[in-house]
Image (cartoon, rainbow, N blue to C red; front, side, top):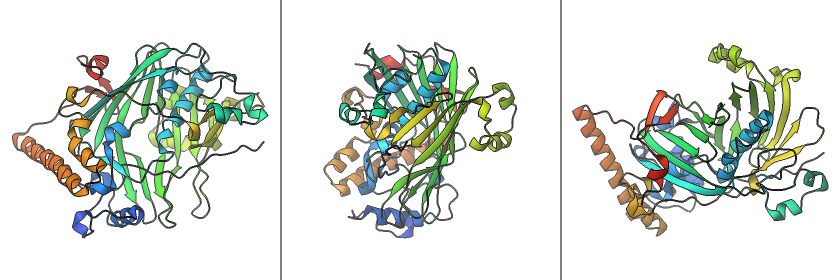
Length: 445
């Protein structure tokens, strides 16, 4: 049966850096940001990892928000809070997949801009008040659908759409992120829903390269993916990031294209998923297609493999059909479907194009610490919102100059800046310091 796929033109943040030494007029606003960005990216051809370069972008191409606030994975806290609710391990796993796709809701119609590069030790905190969604099951309405979209669904689709969580359990999801390195740029993050015992954490470290026609971005050396812990189930899931690219420079219509794959594992349940992001054709309209399989695996044997051996095995074509428990397919920025083995019915997992991002709750600025994101960039943001780009550039340079001065002083005195909030027993898996009480910190009055 044909499914209607919803696609949209998307743009990637935190991926373009200007090189003022190349002579580009970076301070003058332009009505053609695509050509400006392309010109700037051309200056980085041959650079192995653009994110390792000490470069800065002019203010008129910047989003008035810190990367710590924007570049996070809680677009749908309601889908995060319910991850532990199902008593069926396969449906819990499908809930993890639903959460994985929900984090890209922000890319539906975001403008061509990048957020501020966080300064060292900058941090951002917030929380969401949300209603926990229903866990995934064949009789659960996708919580990404609005009433209008669900009422217009076909009769085959509405067979899967029954009801949202009737209990309407109100919960809080807390978030903190801290910039733990400036060059290379790395941040540690931590999400938690205390009421549900659900945690997500990791380190964001990116690697980027301009190929001449597209800007490719992927996880850096210290980026081990997202680690999700369901405390009540004693389960840990690891979700690895695929490669992405900003494409469309040649046609003047920029969009995000994903490639490679995402691997999701849960050693306790011995369930694994490979999600392949299909390569886009250079010509023609992008399809944003994905295909995946959830299957049984031997986690102990898998742990003994070298990274090269595991990469060789982690392909859909190598998955034994007898181990498969479910398949997923669709468009990563539209509708994603799943089908259980032995069931001929396709069930809607999520419609990212219809996904609604809730507002976050952030403490008033006068209650924030001096190195919290909104205070650090306050004057830059105010100037950008007034479209006073000269003032924004001046304020941005003040922040950057202060950062360089502190870095030089620390280097001179042999001071190593340590994380204020995180410990690292594993370089990709931060834990909150015992002294950190996340709820108290975020809601401090």
